Image (cartoon, rainbow, N blue to C red; front, side, top):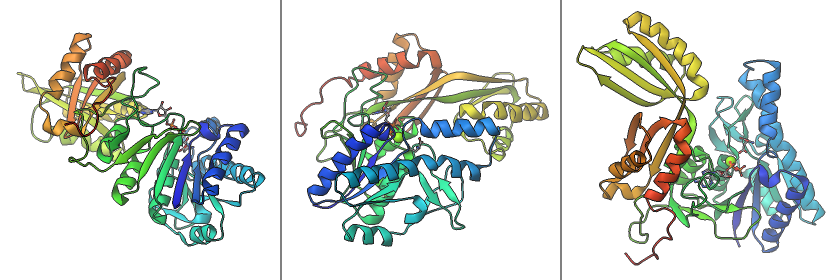
Length: 413
Ligand code: ADP
Ligand code: ASP
Ligand code: MG
């Protein structure tokens, strides 16, 4: 018996029937004597539907109004789930982010949680209620509704678990755990029993949307025991763990992540002199555009080609900014390419294994995929390739690193 925070994603609360199944599950945990806080997402498709409505009204709506709109989806599911619990004889109460008081900063549509007031929650739990909290939303210090970025209900759940010192935070979704890569792309993907926080953070940052990046950051920081499970199928799921070199046999590669939301900009024939990178990226930063991978290459004629990637939705604006820069520094040409993607191999085992990069490049060469850019960190190697080769690249790397194979038994190292 203990305190559990359970988060149910969009497809898990996507219909009245599913909400009923979630209520059955929560009721079972309650009957076993656990204190339960449930965090729900909006019904699947609802947040996208609301965003599309806003875009019909105005091209770039004010972020404050956007948050008032897109936070409504989660309010609906809290009430419906509470009703479903009442119908099953379980005491339950719904709460919006602002009723709990999940205090965030004021960065609308991508707010960060600052503080959670747990007084109300403790009182509710002590009175024997299941608390059903709206995911994805908070409130700033002036009482404005804020949201935490797409996939943000994961972060609400982990933050509540940290604030309440819950025994476990369970993320229920439409797959039965974290896989070596997206199981919807590679049939042979394998569920991982465990993955370290560090690896999960890289996987999430590199595009595996099974957990929101902030949720993983939070869980690592506050050491929240975190597990990803299937909403409606029994199973152990995946435990996100601290690295423990003595107990775990670490495979070199934990998984492969990929991201289609990338676009590449290249400025050609830039005079090769000090300060050029600053002249190019300074204005991009000022325009609030985040830069991801950067590559610069000098030619013999004292010029350099400078490439970097941005989020696809920023391509047009970045190109505009870059054109201005190109005129100013007398560069030859600016090119933009939105048909690229990023593939990353991730694993803490990389630290102690040489040759991962060459194995990766070899596997891609074997299937004729050209690498446009490369970037590495201690536990990750990413490449930028043409988007049309993305699935082929992920499948080839998955098999080259032997990720389909059954893992060796633990403790036999
Ligand atoms: P929810 O609505 O429950 O939050 P999401 O769609 O946000 O669910 O996340 C679950 C999805 O994440 C899965 O359906 C799967 O396609 C995708 N996914 C991407 N990478 C992975 C991975 N490595 N392991 C498991 N699922 C992954
Ligand atoms: N409903 C929000 C979204 O679709 C938050 C979430 O589901 O986690 O992004
Ligand atoms: Mg999600």
